[in-house]
Image (cartoon, rainbow, N blue to C red; front, side, top):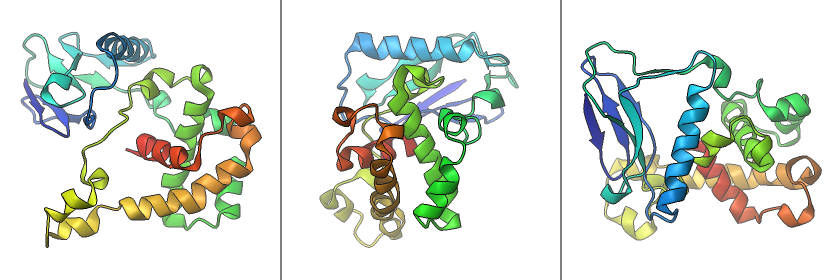
Length: 224
């Protein structure tokens, strides 16, 4: 078993070359050690409690912030070749159809598609972002809260580099493929207006409604 981690990702590989990319790392560790560990343990306990879920007993979620990374999966004892590292039941994979938003408002996605005039090529992605944001807003009422609690708040992927940092790439074609401007435009023109027009659905009261820029930041967080 090999643990691979760098400034941006953490991955676990076994002898059959299985790869798990877990989380993009935060720029700064803003969460206390106790809170960080508590959220990790809550997520793992939640995952193991799901019917059909498996998580190899030799694996554990560890804090890698000391190495400028976030959470990672590490083997605490040897694991043989072809071992099943984990199994994720389909029932706990978040989709539009099994989301709290769809169950409470079955026509919401049709309205989202029609009212916002979203192109088909972008709809599935934006609908999933909308789904995850709703689960975030309902907080403890969401079946996926332990998962949402461990999503990173800060990223070091190219999409989140500053203009000065991107200049270091100079003529690289990578600069044209980052996509943050396009994502921001979609969030600002399609997602945020829809949320603002349906405050009674997405926000419990007027005081809890985030600012537009906070909504865009949250959209990036759940879409990564």
